[in-house]
Length: 178
Image (cartoon, rainbow, N blue to C red; front, top):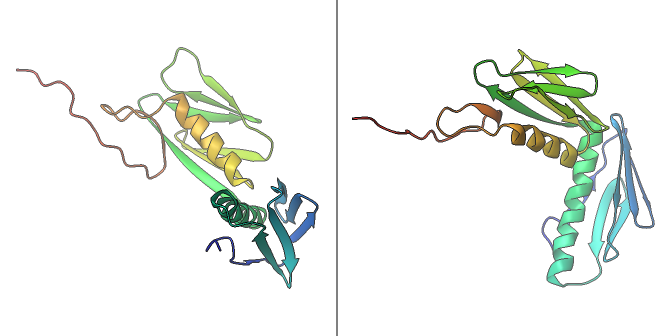
């Protein structure tokens, strides 16, 4: 059996896990998330724990076993604590500001780039250079952060651009003159 897939997931107080057919829904203090199951994996709620089991022993089925368990665990953590990703903007004149459900980013282009936030995602800007993205869905938070970084990836020569907080970049030397 999968080492990850066979571990039971404890359900914290205040969280409701409901399995109906091929749909798992998790409801907690921060919101509600749903996941559609594949037919080869079964989920059951037993004694305050979520137990994931599989029908076969093929490599694909074993991989899905661990994946479904990890997704349900992420959903439970998302509705209790939530997820957060921080980005740093580095460069002279580079800044960001929140305007409703959109974030305007000025990173050296002729016009500010407007990023619309999907439902369930909030953004906060500190000191005009640190963007904090919060939400209950781990996938959405990571995808929105990746979309922000894609606007202006960090330059290897001057280190300017949008990077994840704590990301370490190797700086290239550039041309040397005589």
